[in-house]
Length: 108
Image 1 (cartoon, rainbow, N blue to C red):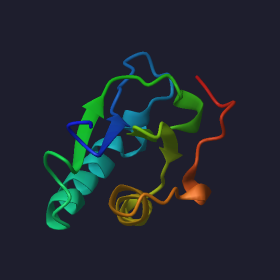
Image 2: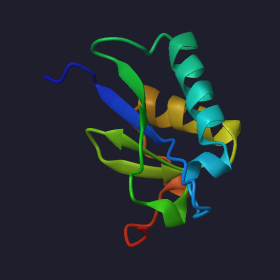
Image 3: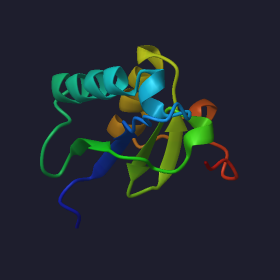
């Protein structure tokens, strides 16, 4: 059994050369919101959910992105409502949020 039931990583990468990056699309705000929602819902901690920052996840064309493990489900999001839906449906109930999925062919 894994230490965490689910682990969500948010790309917070900032590219100084002006290339597109998740940091330019509110990734830090989304990370902070997710972390606070997970705690508020009592989902944080061993055997539950861990919310982590990540550097470049190399899916820039879909940015901003987050990935949930162990399922390996890649999400894009626009606002806090999208993050709330990921927390409630996937992190809490294990249901993939189809409308927010990153298409498998989209990379950098």
